[in-house]
Image 1: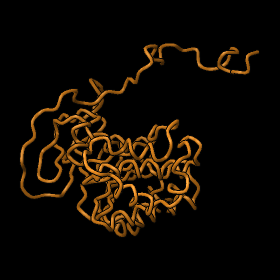
Image 2: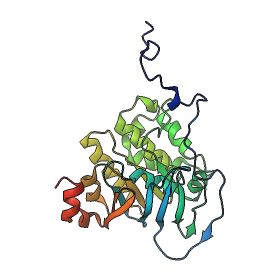
Image 3: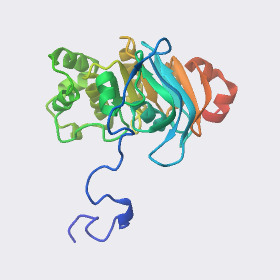
Image 4: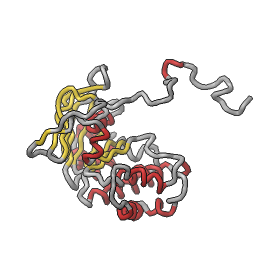
Length: 276
């Protein structure tokens, strides 16, 4: 016995679900960026009537619209499988938008790659695999500033002021941190790009209620600087309580849209999605 359960006859033997070349299989919707066009009016960031899916697969989103303006927190909620994270990935360019558009700060960016959307000002924090575990906290933050050519020290100090525990653990490997602290590193790394909009995919997944409240407090603090925040969140009640806008998705469609307060007080939303 080697002590490794995956070498001792256990684990998944179905090679059809693995990638033997050792690289990720998820690819951006666009390998090369297409043109952008100027647009007038509308929200600061909007995924407008998006319909689409992954690759050649079926449509997952159906005329779905989500938007956020400076200083707002917009939250996407809904049951499991509703298309919440898919809508976020569509806005970020990880999903083929077959109809509809994505517009940011006066530009139609529907044909841009995710990399070029970051350059345009999108800061995206995925739910998983969102930090470099073998690197220190500070190295992770430095990696977040990879597109910048100016002095990043002021931004790093701002991140440390926002998340004081990261300053304390700045020279510790990020993989040694708790789940909540890792999420702080991931958010901090996104903020190092000095984004125009911050997108968070389930930032409180797997953390304790106390840590969730702390993360929400920091998210509110960031939004008060004027930075728009678009967030997918499974903890619907808590997320809507801090939301300026809320979008309830069901099967890839907009089921309910309103302010966080309106959705929390809507009897049908409460009964169907918030446990009464």
